[in-house]
Length: 307
Image (cartoon, rainbow, N blue to C red):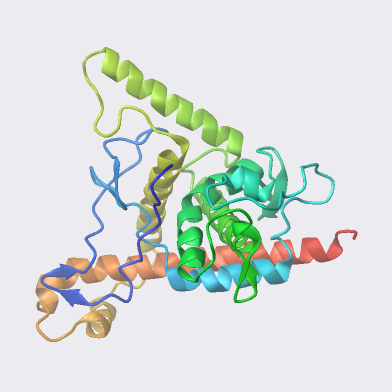
């Protein structure tokens, strides 16, 4: 079973203590060609000049999930696709595919006109599954047979898994669409993701055989590669956005004033961290806005769909 991994909160809103933004600095990285260079995932971070998930904010998820529920896009599969009924009586150890009854090629919903397919939702479900299990078992739900169908505060673990997985998949799709607009990627489909993964693993294998192994893991699985790819895109997109932001001295000082606490370093010493924090906050806000717009489109589309 894979260990749970989740995005770390943004530096935005954190206090400045001990000479840097608590939780770590956002280090400089870049995208070389289509491959990910010099990075590997360790716990929640990415080394070699990359930071995984530094822009995701937990407080956003409630709003995103709420929009998904209102929009009706948490239905497992769009009308017209085929799948097996969701099986009852499954224990907590069941796989996301078993719990959600999705096939990789099922079209679950759309984000900004691009399909979000079962493979993308299942990959997100694999990441959020441990936290859902922890939430429900911590609330007293037994992990044995029927775990996914026993309600906690009126919601079953199956519904919670579906909500969070779909929210994460939609967010990732919107991020990749933005990256395509910025010229960072050419395609945003699941097939393109799998091709990029195969290309990167082939590059790493060729380097290993030549006696020049690349930094990081010898081979990526799709879960790790998805997280590292997202981190690379977050950094690249935030840097592009930074060029359009008001990062004047007065605004940086105002942001420092919101973050600093007694004993914090001076503004001069913390200035770089303050700038990174402000850029991260603005990037998260911009991405949230794009996600909300995509969900609004899904709402309109689902309302027009035949019953």
